[in-house]
Length: 213
Image 1: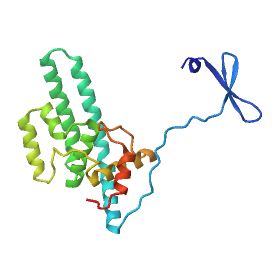
Image 2: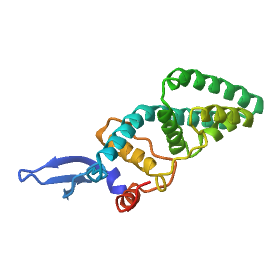
Image 3: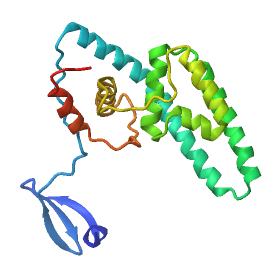
Image 4: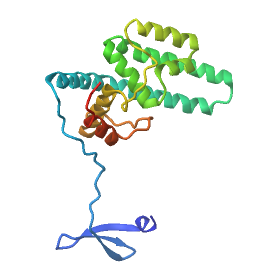
């Protein structure tokens, strides 16, 4: 780190060998700095039905991921601001303002989502925050409101208590696969998961699984 701080400039000689000048001394640079790239397996499907299933999940995941990412960013800002306030009355007042802002910001777009898109969004919010949508509502409002929202969602086959579990649920692994591929292509902006899992280990498990649930 000390040497790095003293780097003055980078030069190139006639033999195309790069050197770094550090305090007047030339040090050969034999490596090229590259961004980390995750090598992904080639997609293979056992049937046309599996291929269609993946394409549907990909389309819906790409559609709802930005909402989950935005929700995570809003909640992080909310937490930081609340921690900076000392009075409980100020915290409650600020929380209500943010809640109304989030509801107004999301409500119109969320109403356009299908049942499966809504459920994927619930899972992605858990992926991004580490907390279920039910518990987020419970923390921000009241247990009764969370209960009411959950029962309302159940009418549309959506559970706000649903967790993102790519290790045990094949669909969740496929969602994660879609995210990784679109992070690398630049179509989606990467936001690290709040959950602890290794994508390579997940891939190895599911590719070697004899039966896919």
